[in-house]
Length: 176
Image (tube, rainbow, N blue to C red):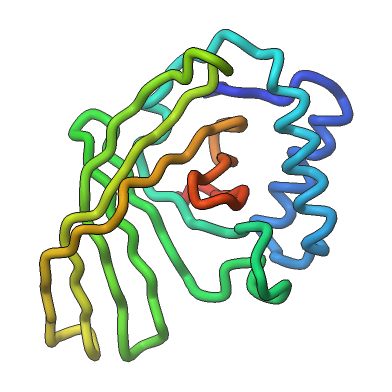
């Protein structure tokens, strides 16, 4: 389902670059950032969006975040997934740190449209955290993390890109 789409041939090529970056993580970070900027610029004129926020429901792998202070970490170095249920208004973020440890944060999300830009925004915050050691032992705690938002400029089937309230552009690919 097409929600926000690249509107020109050049931005279509940029979307192909982003898909390749998600698959291989071998596209140079400068090219990924240039492609993100190109798609964002092409989609600034697009006012009609269909299917938001339900098109976000599912499991997304966070692939790229830029600018990062450490260039080698622009590609997110560990498996990290956002699981979004737009109907229930829930989100979880799972980071897998090898076979020994995984962390997850769970919380809530809401969806809005920015009146100034017409862009679609997911606001989210996490209220609980859990650590798993060797897949068995759990440590759970309540957390009060600052509310953040993603302002989407691309949401096209298996590919999503947004500006984070924390500053960087974020690229995600849908997990099958």
